[in-house]
Length: 458
Ligand code: PLP
Image (tube, rainbow, N blue to C red; front, side, top):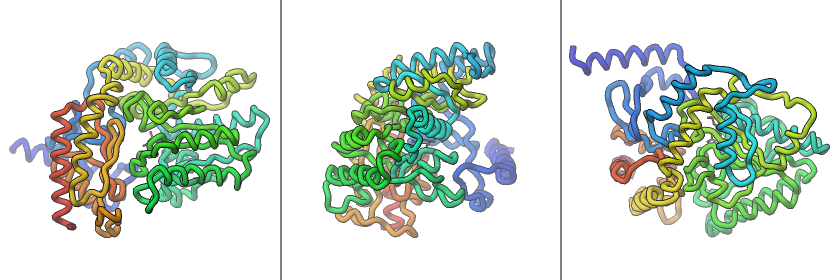
């Protein structure tokens, strides 16, 4: 039996087991049963390998998370050491471990100014759910129990647990579970490409910001607890705020005494060219949520960071804060996150994303703007989007039956590139360690796949 046949039989076995017993995230299972899952077996640097030995350049760093690239010995060793030393203990009831303490201290060093107390969770969704409880608790402690409604944005993604999905403004997340919960509302986002019409991006950004003020006035500022937003909206289609947007949002939050909770799950840890999206866009948050790049996805880990305003009130309260997960501040996850942050600092990955690597990535991305299928390219740091359109001048989209994005994404998979399709917006977010020659490879493959898509639908 040739090696290929052996691999193929093994793949089939995994696919059968998987189709029979595995409920996947965000998957249509009827489709999966007929097509079979792609089985990813290992990864190294920026490359993934499937069970048939096929190599793919991961232009998405997994799900926007593998900042330091795959297969890093430093992180594996840190995890192994912690597993041997303290495989588990909890942080309940006045207990901690050395890694949770050191990671808290490290985060206080790198987080946006003033964010210096941290609660650990296991996923970005849990982080946001915890943040919602912190926001409610804060206003209760402040003697303003009516300040409860949380305003988020349309097309935002904050996760899938009940509160996080309620925060999320991507409406397809809601009906299956009868969401959003009461007390969560959504306002406009600065999606100029899709919604801006004849306005300039800056004018449309201000219009979107003012929808927050209008909502606060409609609800009454005494009933509004917080505004929650990503610096750059990721899963909503890489919506990059224009100049002036965040200044206006912060003016409004301050005016009406509304807390600003910034979801840094994608933007954190160098993705936008500075440590946090808040740094890149001049945001001074009251609270942030982080996950993904915090551990480069090597371990499940999230952290909610509190600034002085919220932190002081909770830390000075006499009552116990009744919240926490069995795995909050898990020693192995924290040890791996510490090793991850050490690699990020040692290899100057944030500086590179904001400097030479980011500049080269943005240059190569911009070169795709001349492709007949492309209406716009946009990006910041190591984030990039490519809009597929029917008419570049009017920004008119293909009808949904054309499924241009999915077609392009499938060509990418077949040709050894992982590029995500959000509708007809193609998105890139590679590891921060990507080299110039790997970027040449990435953008060469991207252009080839745009050509293949255009020849199919053009
Ligand atoms: N917040 C943002 C901005 C995200 O992009 C995501 C996931 O993509 C989440 C929260 C949810 O994180 P998780 O999937 O770890 O629950």
